[in-house]
Image 1 (cartoon, rainbow, N blue to C red):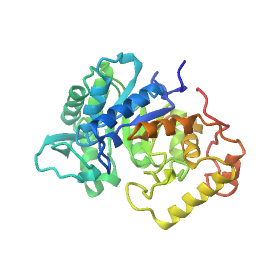
Image 2: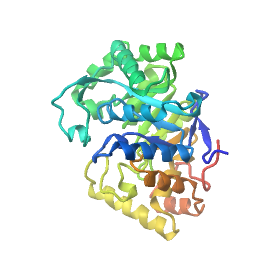
Image 3: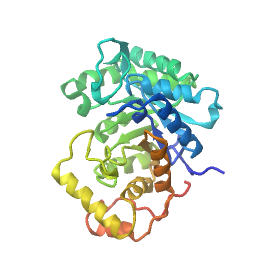
Image 4: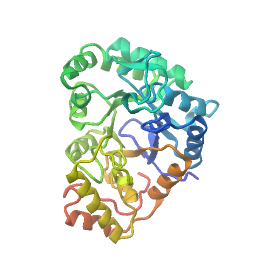
Length: 340
């Protein structure tokens, strides 16, 4: 019997474990993770029945895909679901320095943005080689949007929409090489634009619908109505809701820290770990199939798995709402998660 329930990802026919493993941390995000620890972390996730793994070429400059691929070698392909991303090509470069883009121990490559048809196809083929698989379950356009690209956003958006990037995703899906296509982003606004521009199946949205902030609620409601699946990444907002002084991959603004402390105090009144509440909250929304957490050790895997399984008092959620700590229209959990 599986330890975790699964939920449908929109109308794709895929079912994801409600807790997924984000493999960016295994590639050395902020701090180095050695190969043995990465392998042990993946094994711990497998033992806990976390069979949804998300990676990307950008993570550790190909290190994440290589480590995930090595771990999955020889395992029955139908036993897990795998997502990776396109939008950056990794070009060999011996001049890469530690600390580049937050990676403590990157491999000697550098990312070059390419959202065109040719770029998407090449990125996909390169990922197949690194992962050692013949198909990808979920292929996501990585970090398109103004938050990442600023004044260059229009250039990259044209490559995606007019230069054939979206068309490449559709072709891969129609050929059965990919089972679902979507975006992996940190801003819901560009995801909304993308859903109007292409027949996408899902969105991996990081940090924008969490216990800390729910500005993306109207977007999630539209996804639920349209049958578009949502995967919530960054449920701890870069670690702030898990005891770390980071928010959006950087320092924490005072007003955000004050809100996080208020949430922690309210949870403590009900003897609920803040982390458990942070993982449970997004799963209450009907569009959400899975919460994706970056984990860098077996201990973190077991801790997150325990928090997700922990029954939470139903009284917690209306108390948070009454104090203005969650959006008045946000769906609230009814207890521990159940299979959808």
